[in-house]
Length: 534
Image: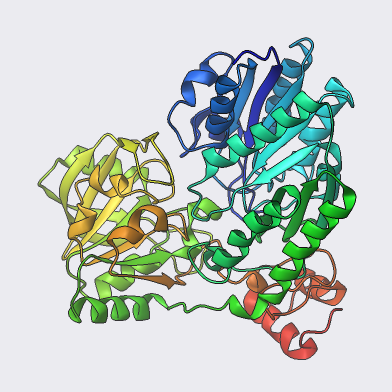
């Protein structure tokens, strides 16, 4: 099908945890860390064959509809602290220059995240859209594919002509979302019309693990989006928001596009009302490290098939964790757990020491540890080096969807009955091949601890006897109310039926209350003020 439509394609993805320890510099985007590494021009088309990312789905639609594709630049980095000013400006400037120099265009497709914060600006996606709009003018439609966790600003919505968000978490529909966004763009280019749009903000944050669309109530809320579209909306999205972002636009939003403003408003109102009504349902069980191992051991002893999988949610590198904290590893060792494995522990020094000592030998190691956390020192232990790897693997599970990862020199270290997968580079443990490539057969283990909050479910749930969520110390608190916010919009509840952010809470966070831990300070404030907005 030859249409002659000329479309620019570009992407710039980052989920920013403004409380995380390490920023995303240019090298982080060049490496990718679970994403496709930074790619330019014609190489972009080849790089996105058979991977589960928004750009892949959009390019498949472009091919099917015979568009003249103008590939510019795609860059993504693993979640972390702010994108550095230098990285943002270099990547954004290259994207804008490529689109500007492309000549006449019929449309622009952007593969973005929705929760990018740079060192010098809060709304990364809004700024990208502003710059792209400035060079293509008001008549060229711009459509973006976005992550379910986007913190979407109204300014961003006003600058573009369409937004489509993921509907699954774990994100198994990234390519499908890109395809939906591209089809929406195609309709605009063919008809020459722009849809009406509606934007609604909702009132409370939800902890990351319980945003999973495998669990109630999110599974129902996202299923309803198809009904909303069947009843008048061209496109409807629910963005749960990424809660670890201390910016005014942090939080959930409902966004709808339709032929008329009445239809768009009706759709957005329906999505927002359903989310608000579900607040009390966002409540699930979590465990301390020792209790998680104890419960997992009980479940194993009770019989059944497959491993008990434990999510080490507060050190999830997909939300700004470092994938190196030792709370769950220590709990496994204390319990003398047998037939257990944990991964990934990112420790290039330990990985190199294992390679130097050689497979089959026993050596002394200092494993993991995060200096930014009290008492999270390395685990000093003797371990058997069971296997060694170069860290290169093909992650074929539903989340990574065929992405090739390079975790650098890696090893499987055995401490009693506990196997530890140690790597040199960071990536979220969301694919069974990440264990297998290091010599651990995940299906054969009794207990698996994964440095992930939710994405692991896509590949591990089919083999799991049960899944537990543990709250071991880590850089990404499970409960958003434990984060030291100072800049949120007043009135936003920090967790379902939880404390409300306001001026007094912000001031308390800024004030030293005698050196007590932040969570103690915030609990004192909650006790004093209840749920009243300040």
